[in-house]
Image (cartoon, rainbow, N blue to C red; front, side, top):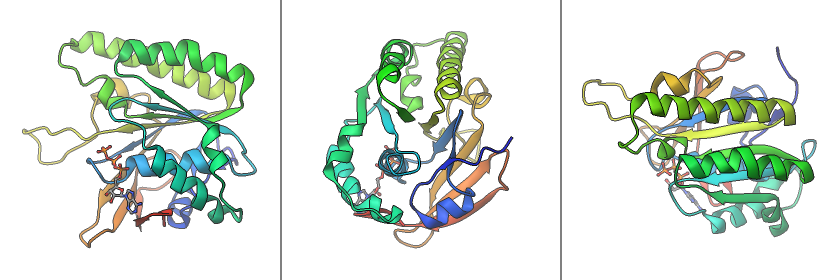
Length: 234
Ligand code: ATP
């Protein structure tokens, strides 16, 4: 089942750990506490996907914060050096940014806008940052939420397979007062669709973070360390 093409992040440790980066045609999840660097990783992927041999564009859905365009600019100038190329602000033009505050808006993006865009633009990466924010509202009943998660995930899988996309969904951690371990949000309704699950966590030492393979069919559970600087993940 191994596909040889992967989306490299450009961070050597993470690319080694994942045996070449993120896989196509499936849902990848990156979860972790606030501020650990989930968005930084996704922005870096949005630049990295434009590098050869993939040379594709990115579709980036922001759900709970404004899009950090300045940070994308910094990364557009610096990340290509990890691929032996020089950076360029025009890389920002190939990141199609959308905002969606709720399930209905996300649905419209995934069922209408993205399929239309895919007819004209070779998108290779879809990021949802974050999926948890969409389903956080306490007004949604459990069953209703499961059905909504189901709809979104089926469509993501369909698009990922038919258009050869890497799908990366950012997730938050639950704060379950009855449990001493905190896991990814959204429970089984969501977890059933996630093929590769990665965790970003802080290390003990200042500024050092850890990227952990929690679950992936082709990788053993393991972790590596990295830092975030102005020029990205290293
Ligand atoms: P949230 O769940 O709150 O959205 P997140 O996990 O997505 O958080 P990010 O926004 O990706 O977190 O990461 C923020 C972290 O990235 C901060 O800890 C910050 O120190 C680091 N960071 C951002 N820009 C830079 C930079 N230019 N240089 C160094 N570190 C940076």
